[in-house]
Image (cartoon, rainbow, N blue to C red):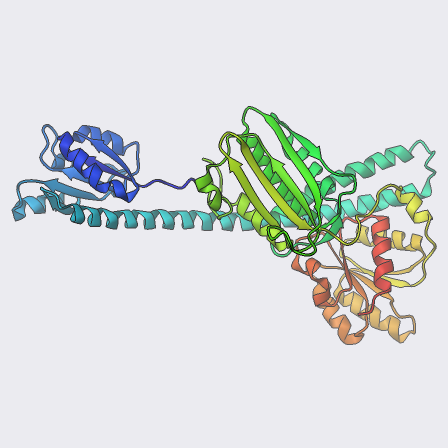
Length: 518
């Protein structure tokens, strides 16, 4: 929503009167329109929304009373307050007639400038309050609709992730059983890549539905940038020029949320260049562990700069660009940059904008560099699985989806584990205790966070720790935005894994978890 300029209308047949009132009210910073007749005033009122009409009573042709009566008879103008202005007829009958035709007040000529200013200020404040109330009402409706849509999107993404988990897991298992020289091997790899692309769609749904704290993983910021920017560039006249150093540091981030930030900034750049142009995206490693550069987080950072060559943003507006609901677009919500600011802040980073008229706009993001490295993807799934020894141990898998249970069992069996399957928390607790009494304790439980109609991972974990305080468990979910996935240790879990997961991801997280102490 654009910041609305408040307008008032002055109606008087004498130019000198119009000019005098305009000069008096100029200091209010409002837009003042004038009309020299009742007909002209009515025409303007159908095209503009006014906070107040200052209406002269005595005018040739249609006088002020007739004009006010016609205003009151029109649904679009009947609620606009009218102050009558007159130099004669101060008697009570004349004044009462004015109030009967819709006036809220009277001013008598010659006008006292202070009285005129004070009365107009009152109606400006009332109109601003009306605009604010309407905006808040609309935003509440929008928020309610977004929450409902976000909940729906999250549910769809969860169900879709379960389907993808079964597909990806079984493809990985097939790749393990055939030689890379087999003619079906590249076909299966192609299906695997297509399925991986489908997971990005679910991540977009989850990003839309997402709220709360970021779910952090160490990842390559350059990969997130190119994937996000390329996605929103489709069908536009703009193109991106990327400049990434080969030794760019990794970043610990929520890839879905950072993707949303990049997409918002690139979309803004595209809209700033309707005729097309180049968007420059550059990354740098910036040492700052001593905190010398106070504009950056006090740690080593990766900076991302996104620059367009559009018309730019006026300097007077730059201090408002991250304010909620502030926008310079006719159809904008005013939430895009505010959301970007919120996400970057939650990542411990900073975001700032610089713009010059006719020279474009630059946004710079600074994110703390990660101590570890993003996982290398140079080996095939089969090579990485075959290069590791067999494991031993007993793992319980709790999931309401039979396909997920069976697929996960095949994966774990391939690693060498003994696998127990249960469909909900009640079964898990019962079997866990039974195994303990039989002297065959469970070494690790992988729990689905959400079990429709049954006991899910959160409640099951709480009860499991009552049975065995040292129990080890991994929480799994297709709802990557669930707060438990970001703070799983607060709920007793030692690790979390997002569906759909692949063989190597599952293997690595199990290895790490079994070495941890609750």
